[in-house]
Length: 204
Image (cartoon, rainbow, N blue to C red):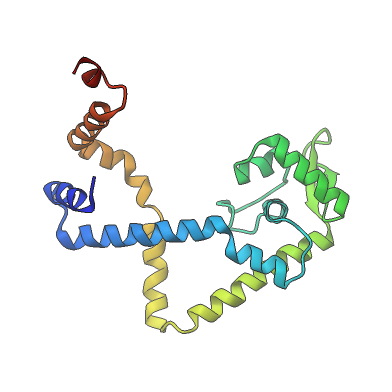
């Protein structure tokens, strides 16, 4: 569907033109942000500028072990196991295990015995690992803080609660899917009809 078709669909659903325009503009910004995030520009630059001899996946694992508050979607990190690392990063446990082993061998992490269950092996950062995590976080916030320093207090005060509110927009999916079930069914029917091997085309 073209932007004009989507615009018409949203207007038909009762969404005002101003909201339609805002949704499309926000989506375009987010798609660009996502692509830049996937390239990990800041992470690459931090490794270079701080002269850290690690790959980004290894840095990610260090952060997942340290689990800075709010950066992993958790409030109380507790003990970290290899399975915890895999879950936090959304990677295969075997890959998490290999990277953890590399970091242990390099002296940035260590294995220890759980205080809650002596049969359980946990992963902790060494002082060298903690220094890297703390330094990369400081690097990030220096750059972000300098960028935000050009914003007014009014802009900062308004932005954070709005961003936090917007961060939950996808929680609305189930309700939205129910509300627009007829429109969604029509879109699904069009996908089926235009599929390369659809029955309609086979009988045509």
